[in-house]
Image: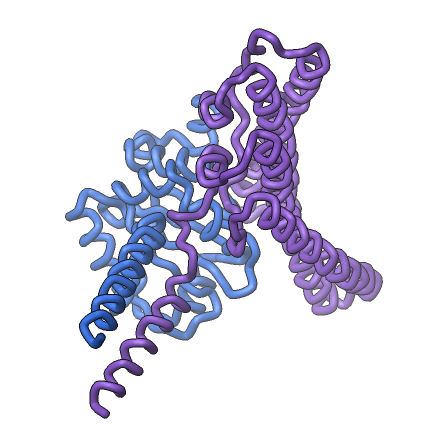
Amino acid sequence: MRKTFYGFLVVLVAGFVFINSANTRAAEFIVEPLDYDFPGEISAAADDGKNLVIMFHQNGCPYCDKMVKRVFPHPDVSSLYGEKFAMIKVNVKGDLDVITPTGETKAEKDFSSESLVRATPVFIFYAKDGKTALRLTGYQDPEMFVAAGKYISEGVFEDGTSFINYVRNAD
Amino acid sequence: MKIEIKKIILAMAVVASMIFNGVPALAEMPQTDVDFINQMGGNDADKIAALEEYYNLHVSELEVQLITEQNTGALLGARRAEREGDVVEAKRLNDMYESTKASKEKMVEENRQIRKNLGVISKIEFSFNLVMAPEAPQDMPPVPAGADDTLKEQLASVWQDVLLAKKNLKFARFDMLEGQEKYNNGVKNIRIGDLMRAVTTAEIAIARSAGDLRLVVARMAVASGQPLADALSGL
């Protein structure tokens, strides 16, 4: 009886672990760092052949929720971003200390304010050398978000082509 | 006694896992019509009825999203107008906040009703959000042999809706792109919220027209004896 009970629990827990892994796989490019050391994160991402993206968000922002619920799990997005990007979220009203990409220690809200984040979400894509490569303000549908990912991962930004021209030319 | 405590702790761990992981997981949810049809039992008539409600739910999810955006936008706008001392604009936006709040409650209830109906028809519990709206095909689907004139006419009509919705989404995306470029460059009075809501509105039109089109294709498949899942996966 006891064996049956524990056997049942093992199967149940294993099942939920499997389900959980499937559930989070869609957004596995979202990183939860211990120390929010952005220069370190940019460098660590580059070592893995990836670019860092910072998503500025806030509670109660329906466009941020839409990105998380509808865009990040989209197969085209999760595939490209899982392979080529690491994303870290910054709460624009948060008090957590972060080391900004320029090496200063500031609260999340001050970093957001200094980054001129006025509406959310904002996505800042960093080149592997730490320079800002692209900034997107507002909701991006899956097609546009994938276009932004390709613009960065394929190095299009390096020759000075603007994202808007890149999208126009690709259309 | 020790064994009883272990049992309780393990049971609590399982329940906690269920709560935190959510049930069912995204991977198991029929986020596409093909998955839905494959998971559902019943005959073709049941499946067609279920598909119609399934597409309605996709549209409803986006409608709830849009009204939430309008409601939040009105609240933020009202607070901004109050800070700027614009009493007239603050009142207009506060009124809009109240009216969109009432509309949101109604739409959430409609969404709940569609979800419930869909569960009854399909015998699949839809206790989760549908997040991948049906996609419209690149080209007009071919008409299978044996399709009647009514279905042919419906296909031609919904295809026009699809083309228009695609065009509008493209415009909304470009407006958004241009708007955010100006906004990032510090240009004032760019209404980024309006631009984002225009994209959601265009997404609703795409979801609705794509659902209508896929439903006509499903009906044609049934009429011509083609398996439903094959017809839909070919789009």
